[in-house]
Image (cartoon, rainbow, N blue to C red; front, top):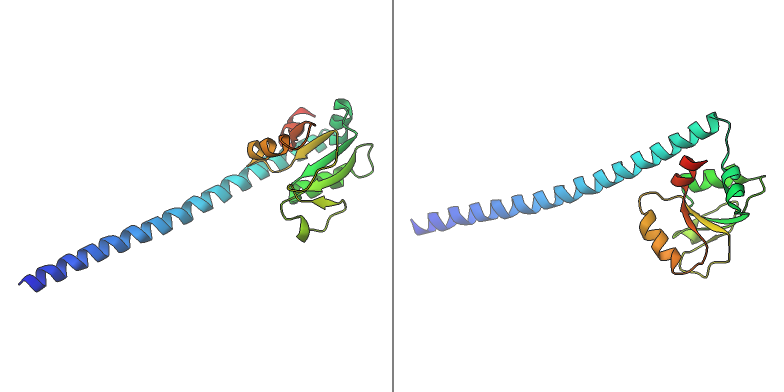
Length: 158
């Protein structure tokens, strides 16, 4: 009888432990997917605002010129960063370089450096990553004396 009780308890404890481990793994996966979903929604909304700006006949160069930013750096060379480089090509606003954690593996129309490298002087750094702007701004502000601005803010102020 004792063997049966011990066996049943072992089975229950094992099943409960397995369920807890599986629940933790599933919970982490769901949380990761939710974060990616939130990031892509924010990116979609920002790009949608960019379309509205273009439909109104405006361009981002006018914002930078109005603020006196003649030479800028772009932080983040994913979709938004590449689009910003394209938008400012042929304008009076020069993109001196781009900054990206994956600098060694990127090809772009401008020089790309790692955020850990020494950063050349520019009038402003435009951060295209909207989900971690505060952290990026804090890190960059320790290294540079120029304004660190969000592309999202630019799009709503142009």
